[in-house]
Image 1: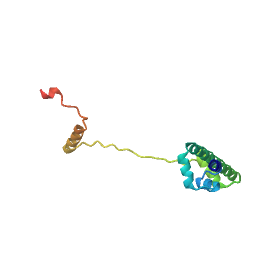
Image 2: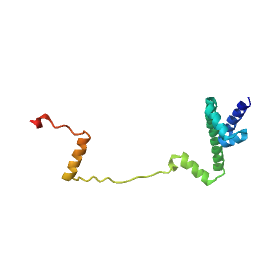
Image 3: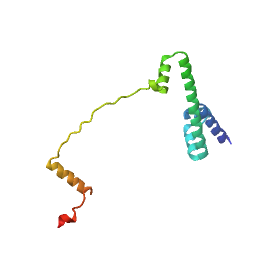
Image 4: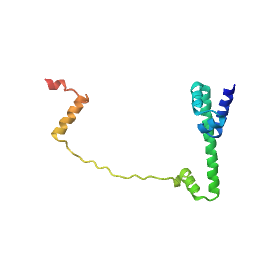
Length: 134
């Protein structure tokens, strides 16, 4: 069936270049058709996910290969990029420092009443003991 051959072509294109628009264009279908097929055919959807992962891995391998070539050629931006992302001594570090001051403030009678009422409403205070009732 022609539809199956087109689906196979789309999957193959996604393995090479993981961009749906490109895969659709090279396979001769529109994006709308692609997404309709993906929605209607679970097997096709699963193959798409696999092909996209494979395509992304392929592109990452190519990019890393180019980066290593640039490092070999002595290109400083490539060297810096590699060291900042792959070498612990060159990673960007953030230092945070500060001081916590804890003031011992007593509450005003109004504040105490507000806190007691909030606790009562939240049912966090204990009920008056029976001994208080006596």
